[in-house]
Image (cartoon, rainbow, N blue to C red; front, side, top):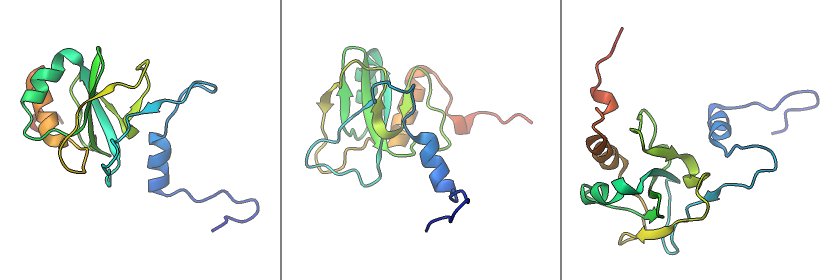
Length: 148
């Protein structure tokens, strides 16, 4: 539906969230690369990614009951999670949450380290979050005291 002459388009909350999450960056900068879902897999919930320094990759992987697609290079490991897995969660440092599974500071696309059986590429976000909290000594956000 066209807004008509002289009128601005109506923005819904969904539109504003998509605009906020859209890839940014300086004009003329190379567009960020995206971690690709392997051929034969589907991502019906969309994809985001959680990255950690490579030193945390092996101990984190050994603590997870189910592992989705994991990508790695010498510096970082990335786990694919369903889109919006950061909703109401503060992922513990040094982990970084990336909407759209975009790679903004990796010189090249990392290699696929683990591919799960089946067609879904996701690592369940709550077990991943809890394992990261345990490894980093961080209290999960829902367990922290509330200050008035």
